[in-house]
Image (cartoon, rainbow, N blue to C red; front, top):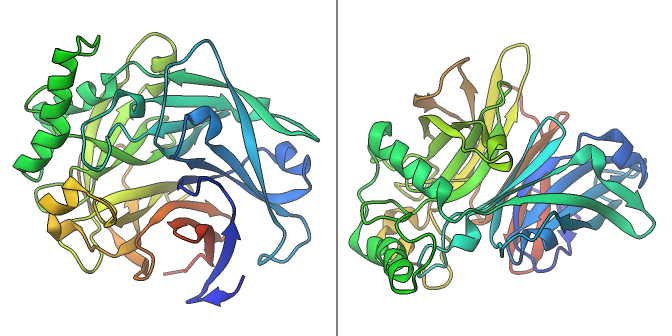
Length: 364
């Protein structure tokens, strides 16, 4: 590991090398089981969620540039959950750690129900032994329920969004509608012709217990990233549905583009109120056959950038000004951000593997 632009670089083997979110471990007993002084949960997006949760730990007494270890969580799904894929965000509420699917689709569409899941496990119930860590995992995957909930709220009281261009509509929405109808899917009718395809990429719980979900797509009409505030997400595991309380538009577009989507969120509380940290960047990766990138070239090369903004108490809708923290001009795929003590940690997905990057908290 060597310093680079004030960052340390760690090579991590998190096969299949698709890190998509990062969250600091808060259970000290869990860290002590491995002799760690610092740890993070990471979600990976290649495979079912039960196979895609990992622990990254730092050995106590080692320098920050060494002593990092990786454990895969043996997550045992409760009941008989349906197939899941594409975990993109991880967040904590109390003792529960939540993981969220993208609710999106492949780069060429259509929307896929297996990506529309929410899962959770109790951090205080994770069992550790010589053979690793294990936990029971609850999985909610009622096809397109959150897609429908958020789209209805956007239509009723959401901000003005970027117009949905024709190729994106055909590839993601119309193709899903057609598949549901022609194959007689139980979810037929949950995706409708006027919908936006949603791509959840970041999540953080506010101190009130409400959830902020960051959208990589769609953006506002001005190309700004959109946050959905949702109350009662725990109801998904109790037979109910959450409620969308509002939408926040963040003035957080980095260099190189006119549109930016959320890549990840982290929220810090304190005496001065809640402060949101978010990484924003391009609306889809530039590799492969991305319909979005072709349809919205102004969102193709937006530089991944870390912003911070104060969250006014009780604010659920409106615009949020953001302050620049740092940018990653050579790292278009910054997938996760976490805060621990006085440091920021970032996880990136690159051809060479998955990297954890960190820097000291900057005052100002």
